[in-house]
Length: 227
Image 1 (cartoon, rainbow, N blue to C red):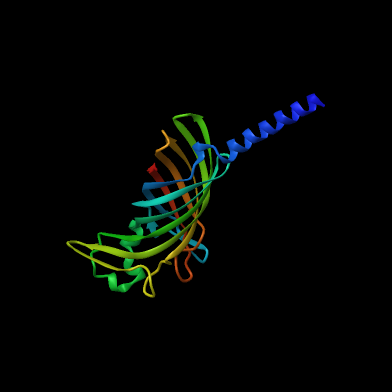
Image 2: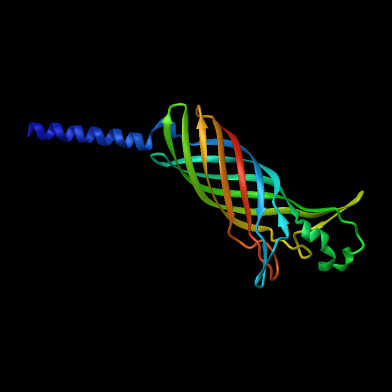
């Protein structure tokens, strides 16, 4: 009986230590963070009927926002956030050189360049797991959905020394405001506060209107600070 009581006490002690490690580990405390990213917006070809047309090429942008990291179990975490973004697409050279075929109103215009410039908000809902290799660094892998809401998008045309723009959203536009992407990536935290990550986001929804379809993907390089 004495040996049984001793073994039971040791088992309870081990379970208590394990529970404390899982739920009360001070290294896994909830925290707020700020993030700044370089973005490369990568639209797919526009699909129409049985053909794919290269309408828009990749373009650069940036985003800035906040996250709130919530420990769930051991090193598993949930990380919602809110981000403001600005990014661009450029029209392909084939479209610019043959733009009169799509709209005769552009036949007499000497268009040297065209782009889409957009800004809005993203709401990521990320789940991840981090590995603590050394005290000074933890490596995390994460994934999750990301809702995108566009506030404004303009089609910008360069015509020699003259430039003009038109709405890309709304009844006269060709893009949808809302999109859902699936984000995945890897991040590293240094000395509990400094953060860097590389991630991608695959577009799930069709962002082109009418009978055409197109997805919008992202590639991000991110730096940040955790409080």
